[in-house]
Amino acid sequence: MLETGRVDAVISDTLEAATWDDVALLGPFTQDRKAMALPLDHVELRDRIDDWLAARETDGWLPQQRQALGAQAAMAPEQVCAEAISANLSQRFSLMPWVAAVKRRESLPIIDPAQEAKVLAQARAMAAREGLPENEAARLFTVLMELSKSIQARNGNAEAEGLGLPELRLAVAGVSSALLPEIRRYVGILADHSEMLETTLRHDLGEWLDADKVGSLLEVLPPRAFGSLKSKPRRAVQ
Image 1 (cartoon, rainbow, N blue to C red):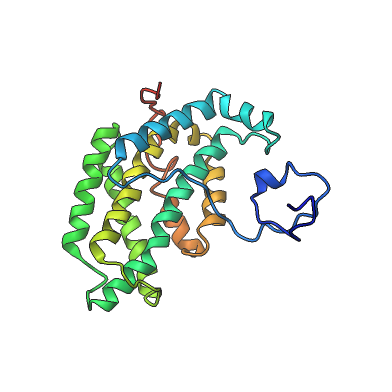
Image 2 (spheres, rainbow, N blue to C red):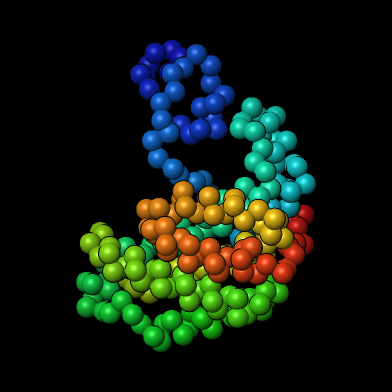
């Protein structure tokens, strides 16, 4: 339609737009990520897909597909790792204004010790399943909860009509359950590339965290934490 003049402009993404000839490119206007949408209770399928994607990125198959399609040059493995962890954290923090709005609407306090204890217990259980140190996981989620509360304290005016705290907590739990598997996949690669994760987080999380808070988060992420471990692949999807 653009080529025939039926429309004056189209909105696409950086991958597709890079393959077009004889067009003027504007933007990018936003920083968005595409992802497969699955029901929140399909955790095993999500992890199998993520494991498969991580393996195909590492063995070179996905970079080859990008090049064959004329898409962007392949990212280095450490960049893939950093992007995966950053995307998870961005997703978590983006939910916090809605959590704050619901708590404000229902006259609930931001601090909920019982809920925090539940989250830490879940983090330890997830770490045990992933073969990660439980204490390291508990430290990570303690910091995540503190940062999340700081975002809630600053952002209580989001539109949250039709949302309830149980469903928001379910969404946060879904995001949280994906973080430790990502760390398990990539901890070995990030061990030699501390600067990559730091650069990515400081770029991507600036909307939610100041420099000091990003620094505190980096202290509980690979390679500063979980640093003595090697990446542990799971059985790939056949």
